[in-house]
Length: 138
Image (cartoon, rainbow, N blue to C red; front, side):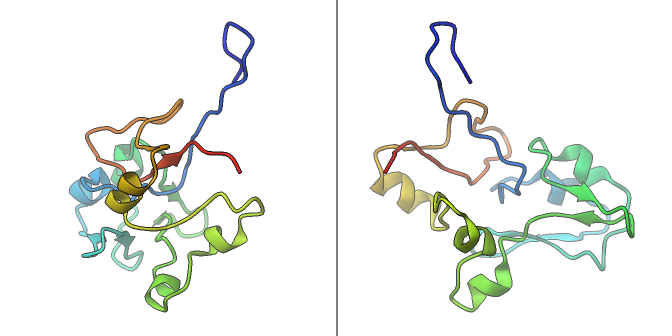
């Protein structure tokens, strides 16, 4: 984004699940299709999904899609099957510029002075999203 004074500024925006500490998708789902793991990852059990769409409407980050194939909700699960095997999520390993990482939010915020839960186009809110913006260039 170019500011009024002509400077170029970074804008961070993601449509991936923010794995919120207070996820509204979990709160509004009448089928209890969403669960929050002890590590904070919000997981959707598509077998329980009734296709009501309430989760999509409730997500302030537009992170939930409705499948055109079966009408059920779909979202990022942070590749829990890879994480559970000690591997990185596919997005981290597949990122061509290596700008993604996964880790404990509190630790990253404490270890990196340039880390923040606020940025242009992204704010911390009532859902308490667990995405961090690290403003450093290599």
